[in-house]
Amino acid sequence: MGLANLVVPASEVRASALALAERIAANGPLAVRTTKRLMAAEIPDADWDMISAAVRTIVDSEDAREGARAFIEKRTPRWVGR
Image 1 (cartoon, rainbow, N blue to C red):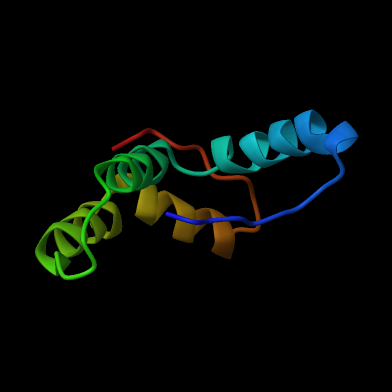
Image 2: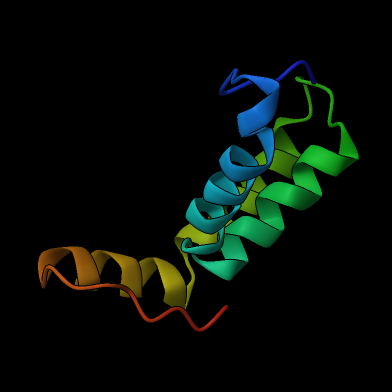
């Protein structure tokens, strides 16, 4: 997909990759799983139906409600993966 979000010296690649993995893992598991699935599927830009369905699944999830509550309450979310 040609995605790059950080360029670091070779000596910092592992540490940077692990730091990024920790940031990703801190997000809701449903959103992370869905994003990984969509990225792996290499969906053509025009397949908005598949993308919209995935977004609806995430937006309508318990995790989305928990994320909003946690933000309002200024606390770390407790993800359930649903």
